[in-house]
Image 1 (cartoon, rainbow, N blue to C red):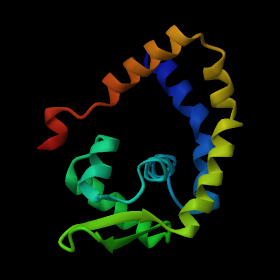
Image 2 (image 1 turned 120 degrees about the vertical axis):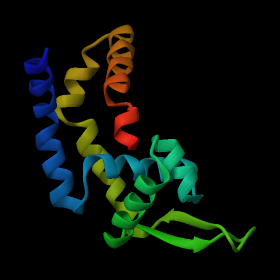
Image 3 (image 1 turned 90 degrees about the vertical axis):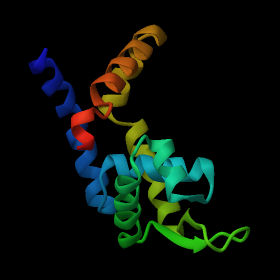
Length: 137
């Protein structure tokens, strides 16, 4: 099982390297940009909730994306105490990296699975990657 997992993880490596070389971020960071594209400007806590991250991890993610110039922070027009995270123009351009994801060997292999197999795989991966009590200590 572990050998199969390592082989599967290795399929994502070329894609991860391409995204890092192109945008200086991890593949998971690109996913965060996609979530921001879908949600629009949101507080850090909401972005974290959408991504399944605790607040400190969400803050670290936003800090990293801001340093890369892919997002910006601005006060909410409705409540100046709330800071919203929004995509920058560079962040919007980086989303073009999703074409690399769609065209990747990994996605082609996943699309060969039928809908039930993809759902089962997604469920198993979510269970394996879900935070545990030990990860919050």
